[in-house]
Length: 423
Image (cartoon, rainbow, N blue to C red):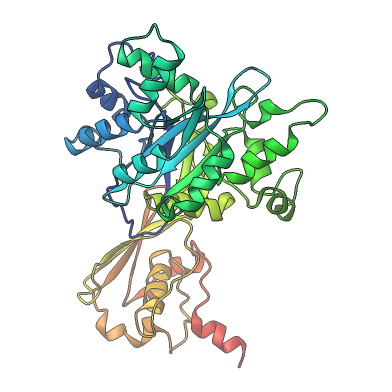
């Protein structure tokens, strides 16, 4: 479920929680008497707020469906997007006796995504004593009762079935090739820890190296909060970007979650390693992070920032200029270019920022917008707000009289100045 949050300032960093369980999770449920309403309150109280929530359960999206209803009731006001994270275990074990975990992250954008996800999961099979069992609730219950005939309770049988169901990576890849819907709406994430991830299949003789590479190559995302892993998968570690791509098909973003199975762990990942994704709070931003992992994904207590707070403009407001609508514009701290058609106001906006930041030279060229439009800017002013919350202002009609422009906050080279360099 997505609530679109298109920011007029452009791409910003938002906190994501891609790996979190909920009361009723099929395996290792430690939530006790915590209700889904209490769960939603705990999520809503997280600071910084969680904007995208990956509702995680084993081989199931039933809890995701329940939380979508809670969001529709207004119970998750801070969360802009819910998406299903189906956790599965491969039929490849680690040296610690765990199945290697993979995560199937599905886009919530398609209105029919719930039915499509269930259809895709139902095509994944596990063979036991010559019979194939599908990845669906009824089939998993049947598997559980087949494995342990003493189990009569459906919930217990589901627990046993889910615990026994192991996914074949080649079978997953084959079904993915057959489903155009899944190809467009599914991202695969690999756990790489030594406990239940790909690092756990390593042996001194490297006998399982090819298996490990197969898993990581089939994945678009890496579930890890380790800074060294983030460097490695972005091509900044022991392998170059070209070497990572050659060996693992692509560079990959590291994402990380709290993996909470109890209410006290909600939104509290180990070592404060929060997950940040740059872009609108949409599944498309996660796809974009797979293309630009270093620029779009980050693990840390706070997101990356550019300049100092006293050197970063956050917004610009102009008064008494009726033709400028809206008269206040948010600005992205990572702004590098103003793009627009000829005559759309690019130079005007740059001039306004220069005036408001005490950076418009008194010797500005007569061809500049600020000089040519002077008669239309009588009693007009511009105010620039900085990330430090400080505001600086300047007159658009009498800026030349202000001596403060000799000590500007930014260096402004107008288009006319640049043009004159080549005359």
